[in-house]
Figure 1 (cartoon, rainbow, N blue to C red):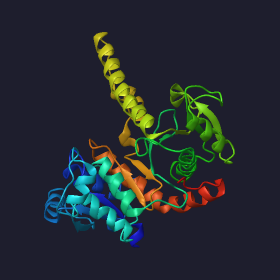
Figure 2: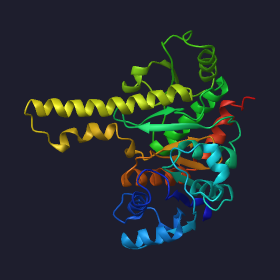
Figure 3: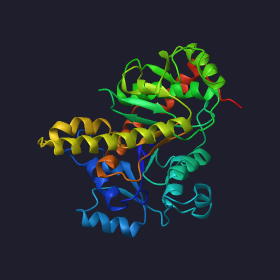
Figure 4: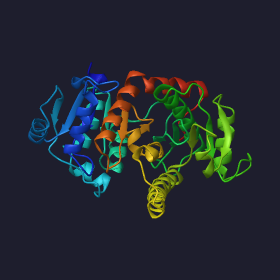
Length: 338
């Protein structure tokens, strides 16, 4: 039972703790599509504040509360904060996964601290040298995952092969895609394009047995050319921030132009477009490759994002994603690079 539980960082994020608690309540609401049992969720934060907050929101439906008196701020240096705040919600939430008291941990807090805690305390799966952050968005009428989005800025070719395997399993287990197409982000489609890293990774992916469709360029992310886009963490993070900024800019510009032309704006008209670029649709990013399920959300997450992150954590646990990743890495012949 304990390994099916999901730890939730109540102190992480710009709108904690109220928004986090609202998201947890939404996840267990009986009207939800796939409600989570309340006793599967363990709340990490100040016990008195959690109890008071739940009381204000109608009461505790059955959550487990684990007292964590310290919070790591969004601007704190991750390594220093983890050393000095050993009773932080991030530290204790990650330790609970290591101790098999929970199987997953969800945080909308300091990304660097979550990645650092998970990597150091949980270790990596066999065949994984460095974990990667997988961000999924519904860009082309189906889920598209970009991996890595910031955890590993200097990968080796073997890392990108491992990311390919993990992205493939993520799409199969959690997104329902039967035969995910994998593309390697590059400056051209030809096999000879790009750096030595990309050329070597291309060769490994080509021989892996995965559904590798070759190199894809930046614009192909929006053209349904691949279900998983593989890249290094530096490039991936730049792509993510550019996508978010451009999406926000274009939506504001579109609404502004329609208003200037006197065109009535109905929420339903732009609703589908907004959802396709809304990070809260999937709630958070899976930190793939660590020995446990870890999900990192936006600091600005609203209650819906928290609810969806918990849903993703439950799905990852219930489909045994990490066991499938280990098997996939063995089948692809992936080994951790030194």
